[in-house]
Length: 245
Image: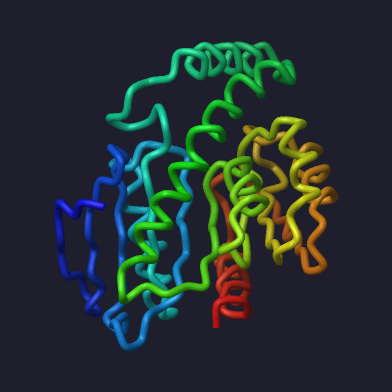
């Protein structure tokens, strides 16, 4: 992991840009994070475009720091300045055409759009997690928050260092990922915006039903994709506090 930028924000939060195996990312650590008192870590997912998403990601990271947690994020494959993925771009065009025609995107389109991202992003996330946890001031436990929900499901299923998953039902989910959710046993907290036109509500409900977690919560609120109420975000914070300490 190579750190290529550093800034001290209000409240003593340290923001460091990094590159790891050619994948760009950002790590935020609270002032309380030291080698003698390492802090838990939240992996911040997002829909892609690290530069475009930076203000929202930094707001989330600073909230994490206020709770005493470090936060890390990486650029998604095919997004930002990373090389595009041809099959994903073709699937995205097919998806937009289906939505414009008032049709439900086919399972084939969803698979071509999402599965290549999952297959590439999850190993990248795990490698970044290895590197971040080598830092003396970050000690775990680890949780994931938001982003492409299929990536979060796969991470929660295969990465044993993750102890909790806060997921946002705002992207399409391949049927194979719903089946993989049956392997997820860590606590899960899912936010669902009931009127999100870009989300398949029934698929989100099927995914939630598939989780094998003994503790799983689905919080559904009226409103569109960006209309998550503040109290829902507060409930998600309490979820992480229960499982990260």
